[in-house]
Amino acid sequence: MFSSYEKKEKTVTIILDGRSENVPEGVSVAAAVLSTGEKHIRVSPVTGEPRSPFCMMGVCYECLMKIDGEKDRQSCQVEVKEGMKIDRQMEVNGDGK
Ligand code: FES
Image 1: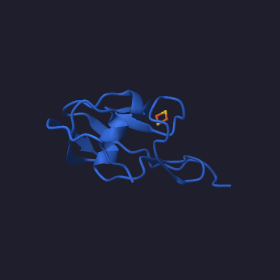
Image 2: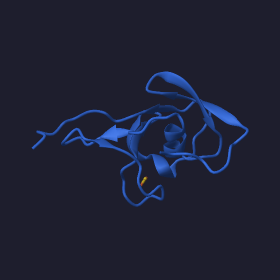
Image 3: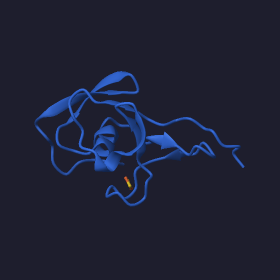
Image 4: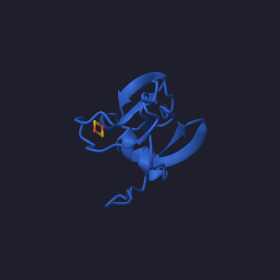
């Protein structure tokens, strides 16, 4: 589904959902997470449906992730950095109707 036009030679190491991943340097957190093979980066807090980044330019808010302990960050607007702790937001708080 997701692939990069260019292969980056340099990588950084992030902690994604508690596991170590090497991802391309200089890309957004959303692109970095997608490059690991993850298709969904959060679920709807109301329905639990899986969600993925859509616009990759700060408009749709489908890319919200917990980055370095701060929830609901637009991962397409944050450049990935060495040692970042990134968590997918998989909590469902709504009633699911
Ligand atoms: S993917 Fe649309 S705001 Fe981030």
